[in-house]
Amino acid sequence: MIETKKKRTDLRERAVLIGVITTFQSEEKVAEYLDELAFLADTAGADSMKRFTQKLDSPNPKTFLGSGKIEEIAAYIKAEDIDLAIFDDELSPSQLKNVERIFEIKVLDRTNLILDIFAARAQTSYARTQVELAQYQYLLPRLTNMWTHLSKQKGGIGMKGPGEREIETDRRIVRDKISLLKKQLQKIDKQMAIQRSNRASMVRVALVGYTNVGKSTLMNLLSKSEVFAENKLFATLDTTVRKVVIHNLPFLMSDTVGFIRKLPTQLVESFKSTLDEVREADVLLHVVDISHSNFEDHISTVDRTIAEIDGREKPTIMIFNKIDAYVPEHRDPDDLQEPENNRHLTLEEWKSTWFARTDRQAIFISATEKENIEDLRNRLYETLAEIHARRYPNNNFLF
Image (cartoon, rainbow, N blue to C red; front, side, top):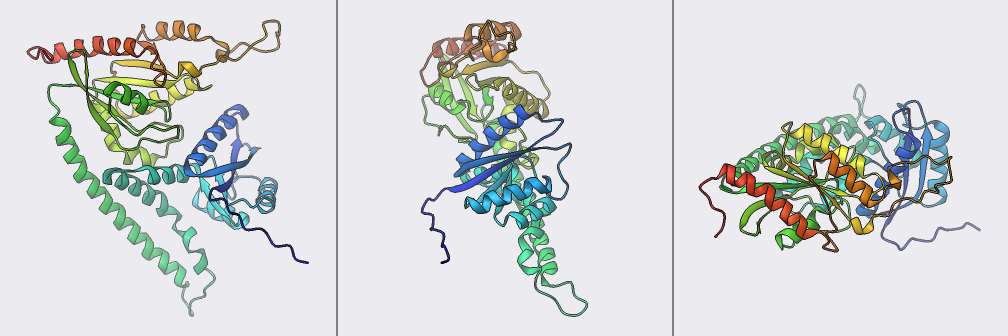
């Protein structure tokens, strides 16, 4: 009797996550990257069923992983009815094609997954155009993968087959589309530059930080407006600008798209509007999720990205959010085997550390619990009032 598989009724896709441990990526680091990949997968609508890692000096140029590991994953995919395989690193077009042929399911890399989330989250026509451009730029070198169904069709004598010609046609269509989208973005960029130049006599503040650290929640709190905020990665894609008044001082605050490690280069280039908000800001509010075990890595990622966008030093206030969720790791003082690290520090010890590092330009808050928000308002007022008085000496704030 032949056993038939039951049809699944759940709408969410089942995924396996795959990472490689190399000389540049330790086992601990890869585990953390896969945690983030699982969160990305959840945001996109997939459940992570299992994780696979392999130690390699360098990824296999044909299949990214070694043949034994590939076979192990392929067997698991077949046995557990998996819909999707997600790699933590970007795959080359040939690697993607080879792995898809072996797994016989949809294969995504980190870049493709992020693009997919961006496409689902984009609200305005500008954000949608930016995402579409990034998707086409990612797609162009991978077009051969889409035409495998035509490779079985043989052409006439002396011909390469219809698949080859279809690919060339498609490449031209995609190049034309990229060119058109770039022109559209240039046009919108000019309009947005005019809009920004019209925001006269006001100091500008930009909220920056890693994705899902609470920037939009803080924006809602300070501006008393409703910006979409959710515990998902990339809840904000469209740059939101609000006029905020603290005491008697009006200023403009912009909520920007969150940064992430291994952010695809296509997206960095495409999201020019966010980058322009950062470039033209007078003060940066760098929001950090202190409850995340690797928040210091997140700070480094954001600092690096901002340095690439705009090399100039800007007044920056470090805002350590989610203090209500911070729990230091327990360490047995009698256990001499366990080395002491930053994860054992208490909140008070972190405060002392960052006050020293930033010349006290750091504040610890909880946006959801509204803890220390008044201190943040006062700190922000002091910083902005000084810039405002220097730049607009004849403008006596609001009276």
